[in-house]
Image (tube, rainbow, N blue to C red; front, side):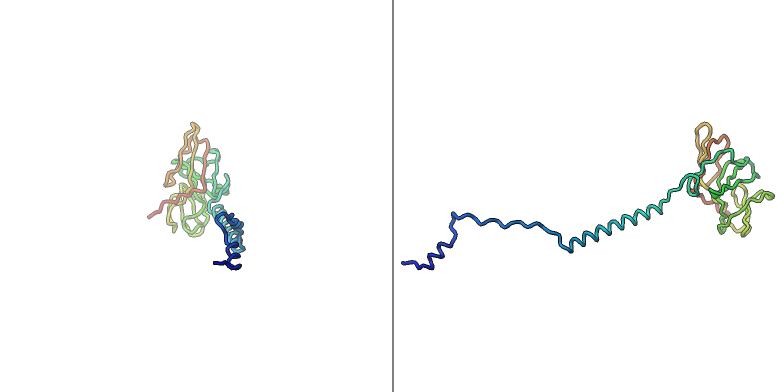
Length: 200
């Protein structure tokens, strides 16, 4: 059977088993689309914003106070304390916003603010007591409530006393006095306020 010219052309064009395989398609580099690029930029911007905001919140939520600044630590020389007595006039340390009270029982750092409505009370030497000029609340020099509308005794700050022998003693949880005899250094932490005892 004779083959036609068209059939011969097809046979010649058909690949044979011995023919070399065609080259593999080249791999293209993956490019970032415009949408992906913008998503990366937005994500990075959001992460930076959240980091800055978190840092600012931590900075203000956990303030750092220097020594000698209200909210920080005050180191006192025992020589500045008033004489230990039940009627001794306390001394106001304005920078620390507390009264230095030194009674027979020991030293207390009393908050300068009245526990009634936050007025600043005064020591009245003739009556040997604290008296609030706003509403008449009265307190002993130990900070103990005497009379008036105040709901509790005066608030105190935590005190730590270092003695000449190197030992230390700290205010108890109720804000009780710390013995001041033979004190070498007195530290008042105005960042740790202890609420006065409620009366009645």
